[in-house]
Image 1: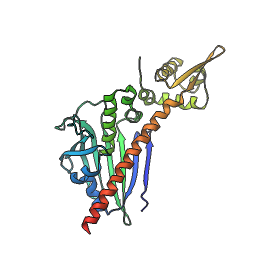
Image 2: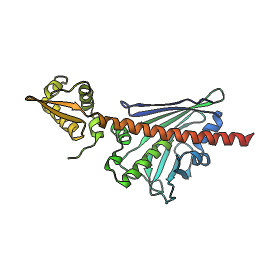
Image 3: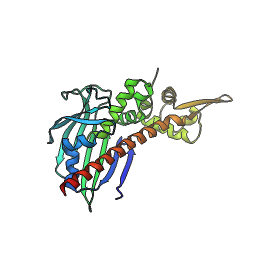
Image 4: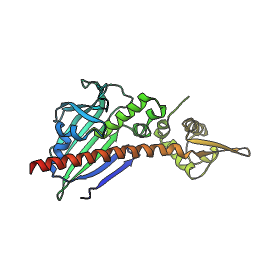
Length: 171
Length: 106
């Protein structure tokens, strides 16, 4: 099956738009984006994997998770997705940031992004639209241009990787 | 002072300057003519863009022309591309997971 994948960036509004079709019904795709046991199976792009520490899927709740690298070292930094709004089987919006293991915000050099995931049932497939808005254009450019990368340090690369992963995974 | 590319692009005037000189190299005066701000603040913007290594200067006679360093601008697109690739890989994993779950249900 040919599955649509569309990726556009609106630099003026610091927003990334992603559209992807999945060959499954709405109920299953919704679960895949909102249930920890499924998220943990696909969220980490190899060789990374996602490990959920807390998942409380309700408005005002949060998903706290970490990216575990191939060396299985304990995570020093966690990703936090706070559920701002949920319209069941239709869409949900999260505020994404970095935190410590208890979900306390940490200063990572980035502020936060807002992500809205919308789901639409189709003929034998489900379309997911993801709209990711950074807090400012500067932040988008900072993320995209890889400020850490330019410093060329190993730590910097690691931070950037983590941030990239956070951006990808934060729902 | 070391600056990074984000500072350069965060400002609308600087973005406009980049668009202008992307077409052709220009003198500071020619650039200033396009904006309703003081020559002094144009100079400030040009200085910041230069410090971000987005601009190259070339001397022609008594005039200094500014031109765009293309490579730096491309970094943004490279990183966007990187992000896109991670997403693609991730979604392919999800395809597999969905496939597995569907088969279990049957």
